Length: 250
Image 1 (cartoon, rainbow, N blue to C red):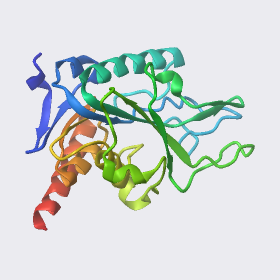
Image 2: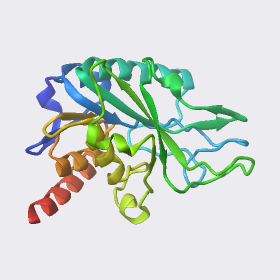
Image 3: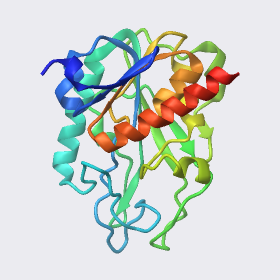
């Protein structure tokens, strides 16, 4: 199949493909930024574990298991990284969000998923969290790892953001995304503002409910999304349509 055959939705600024990102990323044109967050592979809850979802269960994604063997998960993320990195322009960067885990009393910061040097680590403080084990401090942060080409620099105007970003989840609004792990739009906007300029191209290979595209539409960036689930593609499409309709009213 040709890349066009995977196209699900398009706006003046972006395009969404319904496909496995591993299958089609090599067909894309170079991009300025990759901003994404894969399923965390939280696995089944067990005694002494933490960082599962609010009910302590496996996150249930459409078309994807969040409980695959760890070695398989690591290998998959390495393969995705190689494709993402190959798509970057010489001044491009990857902003990769993930959640640390503590399993059997051992902390894992998830850097083993990244086969390239890390430029910087942003701490995303969500300002709330859950503690299932009772023997750990309540987890309230995630990590955004920056991996970049040699010529990439953050946008000067936004260097002031620093390396701790205090951006709360918005329970009512985020829940309406109808996805098990939505981003706050404010987080995506902060990433896009700090790492790109107008008309730059932003890729999200784990598109989910389309928050990356919404941020790009608001900030006049071009975007490319890839999502394996047709259900989430439709959710994202409707969210983008609704958000861009509101933009045109003002």
